[in-house]
Image (cartoon, rainbow, N blue to C red; front, side, top):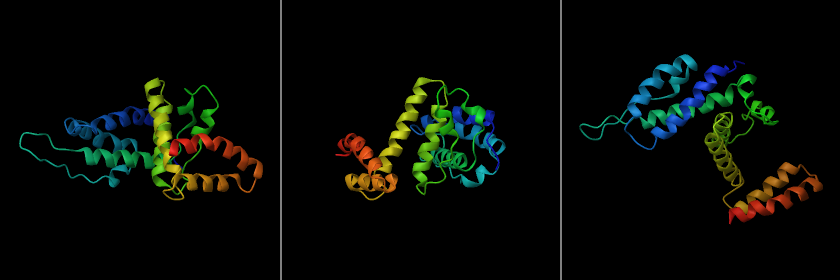
Amino acid sequence: MRQIKKEVYEEIQKDLPKIEQAMSSRNGSWNLWTKLKSKYPILLPGIMAHVRQSAKVSSVGLEADFRPELTQLKEAILAYLIVHPVEEESNEKIENKASEQLSQSTSESADEIGNKKIEESKVYIRDNDSDKKQIALEKIWDGFERLKTVYGEDKKKSVKELISVVSKGSIKTEELLNLNNSYFLIETV
């Protein structure tokens, strides 16, 4: 399987925050889109086949709105990260045991949105900037909140079902998870 080189991953780390920022305003989306649509076919071959360009112009004198294309590109990049592992060297900035978890694939989950949130958090957590690490934490928390609804909209029932599945019949593990679960159930109310 093809790995994503450290240098390519570093470019992704720079570009995802730019895409996020461009999502808040149509102004500047054309400039960013122009740069990225030239760059990503080289960095991640075949990725642009998953992005449909349609640029909307709503008023005369305003720049075309490329936010939908940027959103599609971001989703395609995150999906690419799920399918293709990142070289180990990308974890060298991590100074704890988390580098092993960062190397693990998230493609085992059937929840595509959850997988993307995890991959996006990995992009931010590998950065030295503490603000980016905060964003990573927020992405993981979003993924956790999503996980609490895997078995339905009733979060309490869903969390109990998750604990049952994760404990794999071990009463001791289920008791331990239920002890820690009290905090998470408070958050769901």
